[in-house]
Amino acid sequence: MGDPTIQTISYRKGGVPIKTGKPVKVKLPPTTFRARLNGLLYETNKSFLLPSAIHGMRALKRLFDEHKNLALLVNGHTDRAGTDDYNLRLSDERAKSMSAYLRDAVDEWMKFYGTGVPDEKRWGAHEDGLMLGQVVPADKLSDPGDPTPATSGNARAFQQLSNDTRGTGLPVDGKMSDPTRRALVAAYMAQPGTSLPDGVVPLTHGCGPFHNEVPTAPGVAEQKNRRTEIFFFEDRVTPEQRHPCPGPKGCPEYPEWVKRATKTIDLDSGAGSLTVQVRDPSGAAVEGAAVHLDGPLTEDGTSDAAGDAPFPDMPAGGYTVSVSREGFSDGETAAVVGDGSQGTTKVTLDPISSLDNPRVTPAAADGEVFSFRLLDLRRTPCANCEATVTAGSTRVFGKSDASGLLAVRLPKGTDRVTVTYAPRDAQSLVTWPVRLGLPSVDDPEGAKGRLLNLGYPADADLGFSLSSFQAEHGLDTTVQLDAATKAKLVEAHGG
Image 1 (cartoon, rainbow, N blue to C red):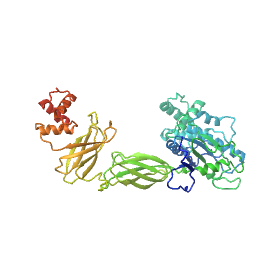
Image 2: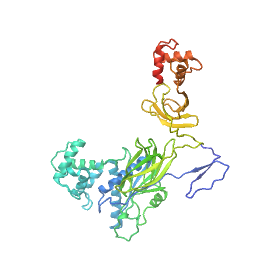
Image 3: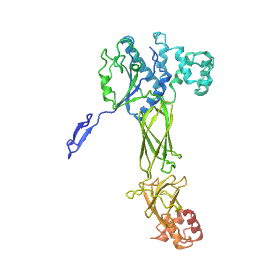
Image 4: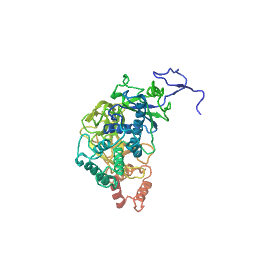
């Protein structure tokens, strides 16, 4: 139970006044998004989702992936051409058709082929051809066209492709039988990146012609009013939709849904790709940078060894690109993704090298390269560990390779450094002093220095350190610097 002495107030658009000196809890409004598809989704009188809508379905699926705990409501709209009752039923059918497509619900689509469906709404060879043109590669169609016709040759090409890639076992006879049509619908619904997870069932609602995006007189056809909107609600649809939507003023819930939406995203502007190139001031690639895109969709990525973070199939529009990497100042830029474009944008990250935070201080140009093997607490190599090496006023940031080896350039004459890193099996950072330029292992100081670098307390108890080292490396515990111990010490230390 919360503290009853703490005042709770609800957030209002524009902000709420808060008095200083007392704790106050501000209750935020539930999260609501609106995704909008205004493009060519359906043909006149039909509820078949056209191939031109598929990129919008992909964008919708990616938006869902970002907000998996939200409830979905698919809301259909029509223009004012035709009667209100007819359009109300049509908008509901279109919303249900889109929901079925997102769920790969083949049976729900097959109903539109039935003899009980009015002629102007019934699906047939035309819809078959549209699906064939989408799922069968152009070079495998025997009768290409625009739109693709549902010829026996094209049906035969699909049957063979379906058997080869989906294991359907269809007869390759060129006949659009019920099993072939079902397989065709299933393949059309299974386009990459368009299916919601199992168990996710969007609610549906048809608003008919009662909530036009562009006000028109009765009987006027307007493409922008033939749209579908998908609302994302936190927890549940609020306020709850009613069936059917009452006319002629429409349902009072719809304006409330729009009002509650904190973000409206247009998903039908096409899609393109964007590659973010992360570089340092010298033009060298910066690997491992976190890249965040915020625009019609939000997306996260990481720069690869070439310093590039690719973002394929992004909805067209403007994006803010934010980049961060430990050891560098954050970077930000703006980018525009166009329909069908393959764009690039570069973000330059400056190494942090101020006196207040000397995370990275370039070593002298005439420095030397020193190598350190980073180990975890079990003394096994710590691969791909980020580390800071400090030598006096110089700090250098680096990363170990697959064998745990870290190579950095330090000023000439450096004889002592500290290495800070996070072993995989440690709860926190480890800071370790390392002695460089040690004398030969035959020199007692050389052997002692190597034991210290390896983590044994040789300066406090040389005998204990020798016996521990010998036991851990399968040597006789002579507690002496014998030949076998010296050889293993050089091997374990790396020199």
